[in-house]
Length: 196
Image 1: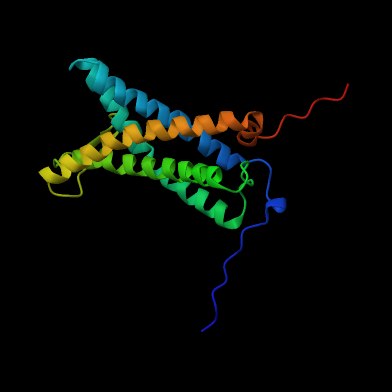
Image 2: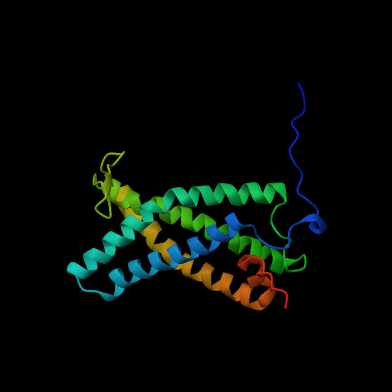
């Protein structure tokens, strides 16, 4: 039986110094969407009394969360492929515990976002209810109503929101620690200055 060969990651010297346009779009688009979802959910849950505005914010939270599921899955696949192919820029931190922490935060962010994206609809489906997406369409429940599943998916979603806030804070702190060099990698190439 022939041996399977996988592409080995590129050495650090051969890696790009900036993230590519797809990675940048996924990063900044995902960041804006994640912050919007957290804000909508936290405001509706913690700050507003029951009423029309609270229900409207929940509808936007649920609809946007459902729409984010496919792009999030594609982002996870793209990130894994880029890592395996050595297309990601080399880490800014020296080898050691800090680099492992940064890798853990990045992986944790993606994992928690995936858990949130699945546990959110599961809260509705486990009650036998469809998920309504901004009045455009509905996704019917693929499962039977299950009270225990509803309880645990809700607990998981709530815990995920708090963990996501903590991981985002660590991510921002790490970016600030590296300063402009970190932002420049995710901001893209500088525009060429016109010759005078």
